[in-house]
Length: 155
Image (tube, rainbow, N blue to C red; front, side):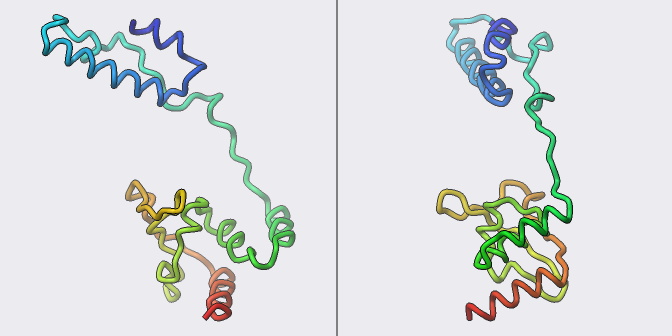
């Protein structure tokens, strides 16, 4: 059951999914011990169990970062209506949901920071899951000038 099951599913399922299966099996076996159907839960504290790693080398493609010429080419090709969004994305590295969740109150103009306080997912706003995701990103004058111009044009 232990290593044979994991080995049979490796390559078919992601490592996180396999870990989730182990959690379910551990709970099922624990309940069976409590009900008297099993004497011992073999998954409890087992060091022999080879747990799948969360990240495998072949699962993690190398991230390609755009060079300044490529960034300029991208920004030149963008519809002017979306320029502030793409400029913010390239200068901050924010995720799409974080970008779409930005509000004017998230910009601190004087210390030159943008705060990530929410994310948009499937039409709903959510707080980022971890404290590291709720963060301040230092930004420069160029981005603040573009965002200030956008704000003036809208209000």
